[in-house]
Length: 112
Image 1 (cartoon, rainbow, N blue to C red):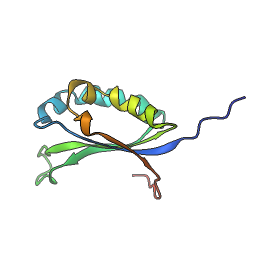
Image 2: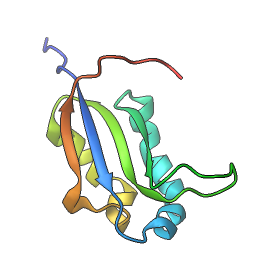
Image 3: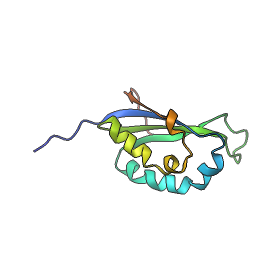
């Protein structure tokens, strides 16, 4: 019987392409649907957009500049496969030439 593969934390930072907000918003549903099985399977631990600034009003759409994600995976290649398969990567929201996957050790994790 084989041992389950060790799972590690990986911090992913991906900037958006310039002026990607309309493309990001029009592909958001596909992006969320793609992420759901990764969330349910415990692979996607944390994710959200980076912002140019905090919005001044609750109904204001913030200027999003990229994405930060924390994955739990056995290898860096497994993380890259999940990132490359994301609709935001496929339609050009993300600047994949400047995407980074960094080994990470989360010292504090608290539920929301």
